[in-house]
Image (cartoon, rainbow, N blue to C red; front, side, top):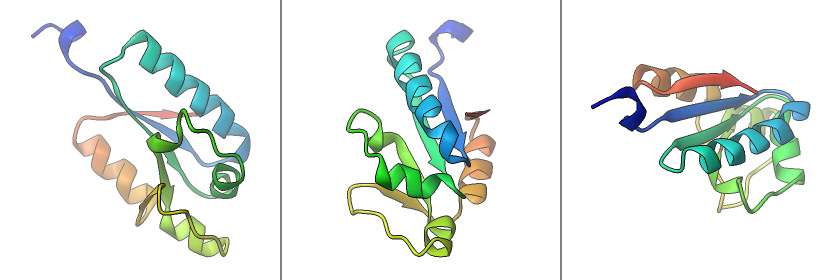
Length: 104
């Protein structure tokens, strides 16, 4: 299988509120350019509140919210959003599975 036919798996890491719109745009652009790509937008720290306050139907299914960050901010996520126990663990596990990491 040539590199161009191997499906991409991309993590967009969003630790800051200002990076959220950029990550969402990156995800949209990536999926438009390479439709078979798997994309996760991993949100932690100060960005979790922004992700909850600024819903985006086009990319919310890609979000992976950090439970530690939610708890630390006194927030909870709606049932339709995916929450991972710890962003750092999720990022490390995905990278060990061959996912590419990009900080937004």
